[in-house]
Image (cartoon, rainbow, N blue to C red; front, side, top):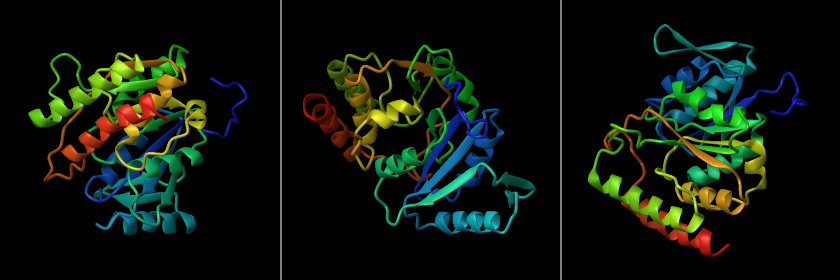
Length: 254
């Protein structure tokens, strides 16, 4: 870790891209804040139309009024001090939202946290440990720990396996889960990557560019609760096809 880091700057920036997650956003933010990390939380709304954007603007207004807490979920509450909220003018995709948030991050380590409830912030210590110990520059979670059932359908499982296989062949990495949402980076890694994918192709592009840059990558097992399409799952088979195209595009091209 950088000994010159300002005492007021967080160690960790948790980046939360959001699109139409009104049903789960308050709960996931509470879970993130319950983690013991010295963190800032950067929420970036990607043009939501389900009430998410209005709820977030309400949090901004509360903070500007001087409030320290926002009431959520009955008797629960959400701290406003370490919460930074950004808005995209229109829906541009996860990759575009992440690029914007990465530019705003002040922490030495950046964690991507999806706004649904599939990933558990209680896994942060496991995800952060390889970087804190100086053993890695980038950490991926893996949903394929022994005994795990990470996908709801064989189609999802097979698509992930095919894209991961081709990605590994071309990057030289030995990942088991290239599509995983939990990815953690030293901030300087992100600053060095010329990312451009706007949607879910980000997952493949960032992997290719990390490998090409020679950054040290490791995987750690995480817990995972898959959700269904009815519950708001957004990635589709079209994203898997585009992801496979991105494997070749970013490993064999520019």
